[in-house]
Image (cartoon, rainbow, N blue to C red; front, side):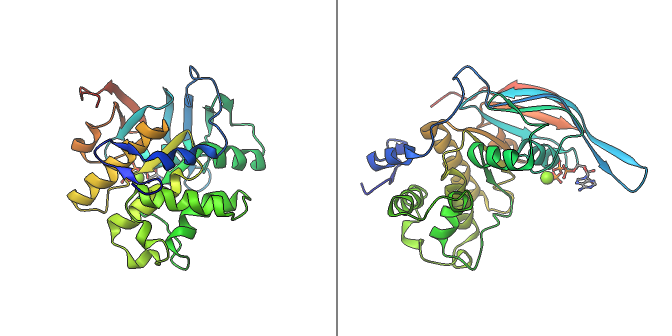
Length: 265
Ligand SMILES: Nc1ncnc2c1ncn2[C@@H]1O[C@H](COP(=O)(O)OP(=O)(O)OP(=O)(O)O)[C@@H](O)[C@H]1O
Ligand SMILES: [Mg+2]
């Protein structure tokens, strides 16, 4: 097995995959949730003075290594919630703790740094940069945080591409790959910095069933291999049932929060 190759039979990365751990170790004590929301609210200004509240006081915690689905009707606030959790949008009230750090009062630079070291994003539209080769896209989260493009960093990026089955495509442009392949690149990119939390907003929304299964399986395998917590928005009940837990958001409220009955592998 080559460096970092994903061993489907073993369900884990090959030995060289262990080197992916060289990045900053995950912070916080094992008992501390990776994410905690305390009465979190979000309003949008819909023209003065009209304010519309989209999230109405959301509270829950996500443990280290937990794999949770966020489901709910269109317009219920799932993307809004993910954007607030991802520190891309500010809450209007309440508090959001990432790795135990309260985030509301952080300066912009601190918030950006915390986001960079804590969170990996996988979006419905993968947002790969078409002008750059696949490998450069995977390295992007480290480069934007100021990391130098060393041989070691490239080796880590290639090992991740290998793990998602795309090492041979490292020098291609993203638009030379299929939608499912591009989404696998986006997952490799999200994992590069070994974030303790991965946020995925309908990562399989644009994929056929087969590609959706592949992408979802990859998220699950990285979750088990690297121990990153995952919060994934999905409209697919079949995929939600493969998570440890399902949070149901309706009209900006979590109306149910239940463990699934799936048997752990
Ligand atoms: N930037 C914004 N300004 C004003 N209203 C917004 C903004 N973004 C979202 N909303 C509103 O917030 C509500 C929740 O939207 P959101 O995108 O979070 O829903 P969603 O659950 O992700 O839906 P979908 O399943 O269709 O993606 C909607 O009523 C939407 O119109
Ligand atoms: Mg959405």
